[in-house]
Amino acid sequence: AHVGTHSAAEAARVIFRFGLWPAALDIWRISSNDPRAKAWAKAQWKDRQLVMPGLAPLPLSALAARAHARNLVTGAVAHSFSRW
Image (cartoon, rainbow, N blue to C red):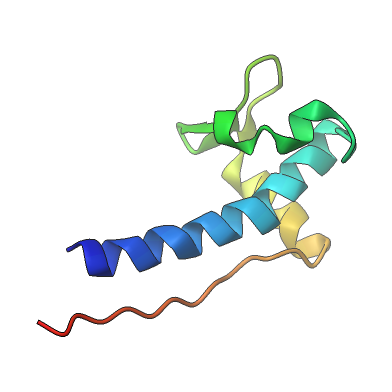
């Protein structure tokens, strides 16, 4: 199972880190030189919203719309195989 789930998790990480996270920073008006801009590991999903301590929760639909509007990463392809 690790072979199949690891590639999916990595594809999701790429979409989050280079698509949804920059979209969230844009909505929250956090600049790239703000220390919070590098704190993506503290973000969590709760009830289809991205939550960060001290910031307003952001619905996934708003993040996706902003990511699409800014031509950020909104999809990723992964491949895995098992020789067993």
